[in-house]
Length: 435
Ligand SMILES: [Zn+2]
Figure (cartoon, rainbow, N blue to C red):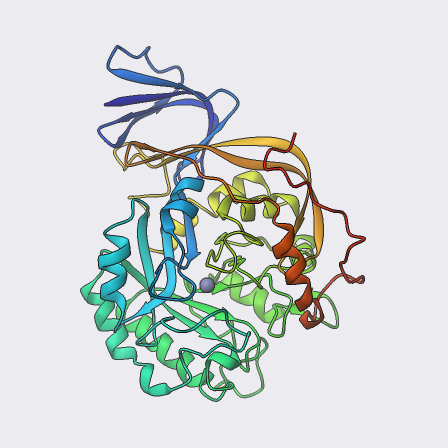
């Protein structure tokens, strides 16, 4: 079976391509990319892509896909593949004791390519919910936090497992008592397996800035090149922004320059327009755009990866950088460059078609603060391994009930708009189709 995607604008940052090109798919692989490829014969299906962007299948580096076994798990095919994401990376839903189920019941069953960070806690997020909201924590007991078992599980499952995850939030680590030790063990597990560590850092007792004592752990300062700092744009305690000066902490800039990667990790509570705009003003773009899709974010306020990408476009991140942060950079970060995240000839035919449409829509952050979007990307087609996939849509977009309920957390923000968002804020249009 051959498919010719004709006349679209290809953006393939891994290969430095940004041009109107045709793309030929054959036997599940990228067979050719070029100007005006030959007219297809009868065996070749032609797809008119004029007016559309043709990009490598999107990679969402931060989702929670262990559905039915963890409180946060979502239907991966519905919220990822159906929205243009051909590869989703589960961010620590499972640990060494529970990974077998993630493999058997999710990774081997879903059509989306599911990879994963393994939680350093043996039971992963089996009973844990969103951090910082009083639910039981996966690192409440250090008996469950085992670096050796984590790295040996990764070594046995290299086809799926690509990294280690730890959540640094006081109330998932026995009110902060276990945070430093959990962080140490997670770093040890990642080093032993030679994989990146993804750290969630929010409402944490681990400081952003260093002290005079170099043995004191900081975050992101203690991370290594290639490690991933997720939830980069939250406005809560442990934000990368100094709440007094409204500037990015020098230690954060130093870590970025050293090669620590910063991920949006939007989720239910971790994206603030105010923080994102301060970062934009300083030219601090995220290296990775992950959605942190889970049960409490998938019908708002995150919705899906493309909606999170649209928020990055709204703060002024260039389109090419946005595409790079969901294709080439995540592929490299997880050690899968050369397999996914590019349109390199001979690699698997994972492709996403996107329309860049003008719109007039107000969209919320995680605490109900609003901004107006004038343009947005919309998924229009997806192929995974050369097979076309049905597009899905949010149930309600924007979801006013969710955005209204999120406003209760506005007082928790240390970095926020001057005015509390409320009923006088611009109301969003409620139709999915915004003209
Ligand atoms: Zn997460």
